[in-house]
Length: 116
Image (cartoon, rainbow, N blue to C red; front, side):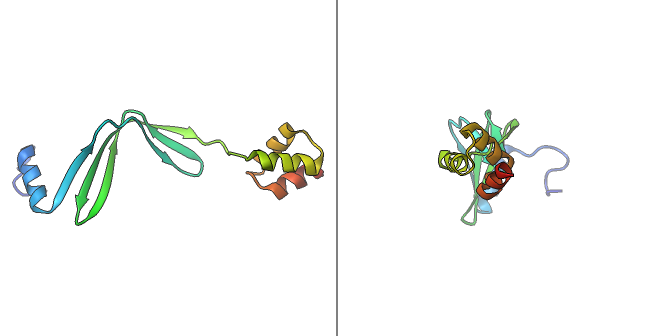
């Protein structure tokens, strides 16, 4: 428990003053349209994000508040890889693309799968 709160909410001006005394500065990022967090298998998208930056002792910490939506990421396969697999195996580019997707983009694995 923080001293002085006494079970009630604190005055926002007093909180801001205390944070300033501790060397903490918070700024809002205006006009945020979208925040995307990318991982290897999905994107976490905030279309209604509110973003603030807290600076304490020279370190910036970003806080994102909003409604997250998880979107699965599709594997991006370069056209050159598709053509190479198609040429090496004699299959169509569509079949080569499918084989590369099944092999998570691994050229050798896709060629071996189509060759057997």
